[in-house]
Figure 1 (cartoon, rainbow, N blue to C red):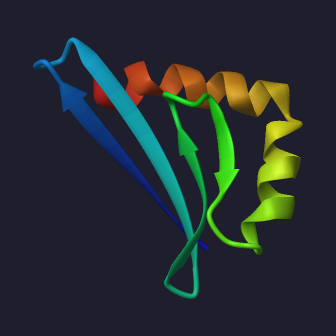
Figure 2: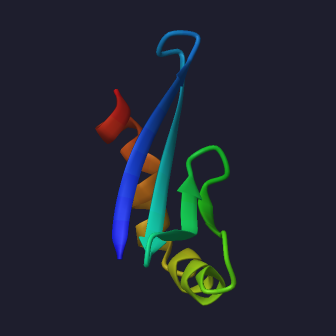
Figure 3: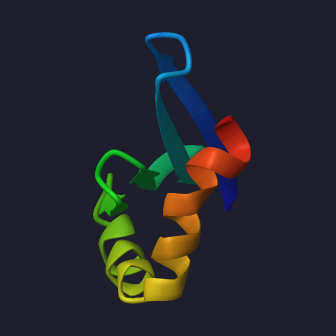
Length: 72
């Protein structure tokens, strides 16, 4: 697994979006988008992972807060 975090800024720093992308064998399979607020599968491999991670409310709360931690 390889995880990458990206910050995207709109209107300066007024609107910030955090993307967490998870890769396996060089292919993105699941991502967290702070605008959506949960994990979404990118491939079939990501479906069970997204389902599991989305069931962990503490993990989702942490990810949602990280837009401020990582990007601001």
